[in-house]
Length: 91
Image (cartoon, rainbow, N blue to C red):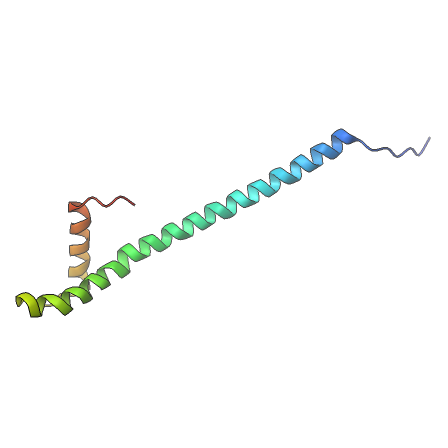
């Protein structure tokens, strides 16, 4: 039996291809995770922060300008939801 060691260019090319495909899959998964994180922050902003901002702005302006009552968080959430329905906001 002879101990011949030789270089197989097809095997080497296949190995490089597999490594590149694995790296591409990893980067695509990272990109998908990043997009999911951005979407989660947008939902958080829409459900929590926007109504709080609306409530604070309403309570700062409306009682003094028009003599209206102050509102709470859930009333501000309802106004925010109603405004999004009326004015069709595409995300």
